[in-house]
Length: 239
Image (tube, rainbow, N blue to C red; front, side):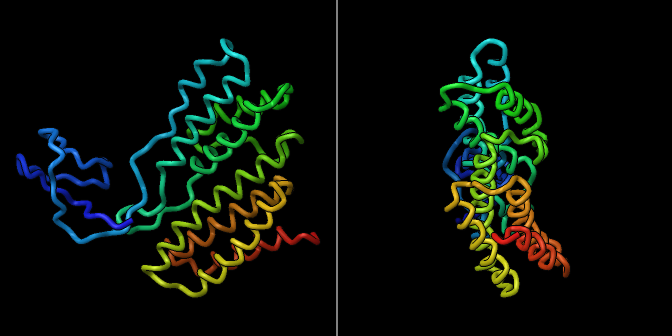
């Protein structure tokens, strides 16, 4: 969406930046009567942090299904509010967002499970421990039962980032990037159609391809689109 991020309070005259506070409420007097004093700018980001303390506090107290459900709720709130265009500037696909999306999917899958294996519980706890700092378990440590879940999480991550990439490209066209992004979407659609049933390495390749498109647009990196194509080649069904 496009907003006027520089705000002026009509009650006390104070000025602040919505981009930093995420609120139209005046930080000085609390009034919600304000006007924008700049041009409308595309903005999808929010000042949000991944807060997992409520789920962590349940460990050793509640069964893993309950912990998983609470973790999924926390992660879902984060990914719902987060975005990748900050006052018109495209942001990278951050590791914390990727980890939060995976925690959301893994948490929901475990919460629905009739029985939780030791491997699944360890994987959940590892995600809970590292997600806020962008850490996820390595691809070769994903339990077989959760391999499709990681694939679906990767597809969902790319879908969210692609949405903002397309908005950014509407404002700053780049046909080469748009073409590669179209290929990313083709592979994302395939992974989703397979219900995420691709190898963890392929799930990572999908994420890295989308991230590389963003890097090209943010840094004007001449090699980033080639890297994106290389990652997409790892998703070839015949490999």
